[in-house]
Amino acid sequence: MSLLGHSFVLSDLYFVILSIVKFCEMAYNYIQVSYDISNEESLIIEVAPLQSIKDSYSKIIIARTKSDNYDYNGIVITDIAR
Image (tube, rainbow, N blue to C red):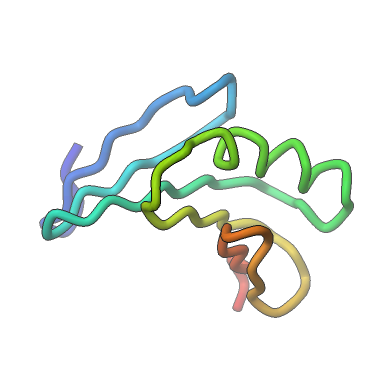
């Protein structure tokens, strides 16, 4: 899949609803999209597949967190509305 000159691979990574691996300039980013991870239980469910990947590429979750961007054990959590 191509979007704005970037290649994307959509996958069902460990039964997660949507995961995107972005290939751009020889850099890989794992991007997980989730609706709402404002409670701890949802957050743990969403970060588990990314934590199981044992490489050093960037891991990002885009979700409705209702808070500022933050880092959760090396995974960048960013709010879709900010």
